[in-house]
Every structure is written in C-alpha cells, then in structure tokens.
Amino acid sequence: MRHPAALDLRLTVTLTLNTLVSTHFLGWLRAQLTQDASLAARLVFQISEPDLLTAQHHMQYFCEQLRELRIKLCICQFGCTPDPLRYLPLLHAQLVKLDVSLLENMGADPVQRDHLAVLTARLHDSGLRVSAGMVEDMSQLPLLWAANIQSVQGFCLHRPGPTLNYAFLHKQTLALS
Image (cartoon, rainbow, N blue to C red; front, side, top):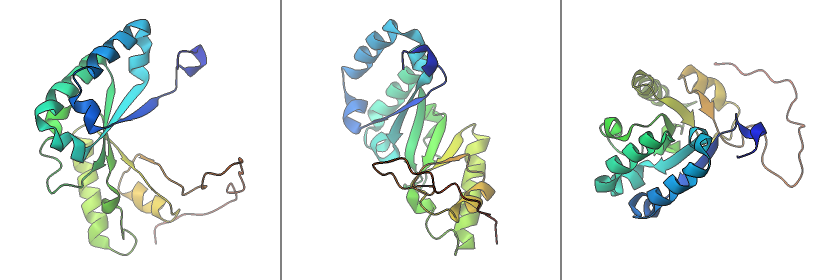
C-alpha cells in the first residue's frame, strides 16, 4: 500500500470485537499512520453489526476515532438485528455490507425483494453505500441491481482456484423476469 502505484487501491480490513475493545489498538494505529499519512484514506475497517452491538459502550468512541483518522467504516452483517437503523447515527459509517439473510429467496419472494429495496433506499438516504456479500449466483445480480445495491462480493463469476481461469467471460444475458 505504500508503493505509488497503490494510490487508487483500497484495503478492507476486518476487525473483531477484541480490536474494538482493545486499549492499545488506536494508539498503535495512530503511530502507523504518522509514518504514511495517505494510508488512512485508503483503509476501510469492516466491523460486524453483532460485534458493534456487543460492545456498545466502546463503539461510539471507536467510530469517532476512525472518523478523526479519516478511515472509512463498513458495517458488515448489516440487518441481522431487528432494528439495524437505530444505531447508525452513532457510527459515522460510510458503507454497509448486507447480512446474507436479507438476500435469501429473493428470486421467489417479492416481499423479500420489496423489503430489501426499502432498506437500501433508507441506507442511501443516510448517505451510505450498500454492498451485498456472498453472492454466488449470477441470477441474483439483476435483483440486487433493481434494489440499488452498489457492489457485490462473492463467487458468482468464478470460484477461486489454484490457477487463473477466465473461461467465465462468455457472453451471458441477465434480466429481471
């Protein structure tokens, strides 16, 4: 990340509950960032919704420190609790990665699709970028795009393997039915 060619790269780092409650992590992080001031702008820290809610007495301070350091915050597993929108103003997050439970049965369940579209609209209204993880079926992509999901992660294009095999780049049409 310190090489000039890496200026446009982003590094997403998943943090655990232990990091969130650590008394040493933020001090260590500040020391690292003094060595390379541009590093903070390229970092995205990803913390799960359950970890944030487990450490409620630490989360607001931790998230404020990330904002001061100009490190982006992504809340992953977003939507796995009954009212995930209630704590968002405290977190200063820029991104959310939806919980996989919100994506289940989208093709067969119009109520699930509508719920996802409404949730995504509310997140966009709050200024958040929305991502879907664990997308493993190409047929989900049009449904996710229709719900205004901005990015996806998963094996839908190609499962990782020991060699780079780009045979998946054949022509394919995706459409909402």
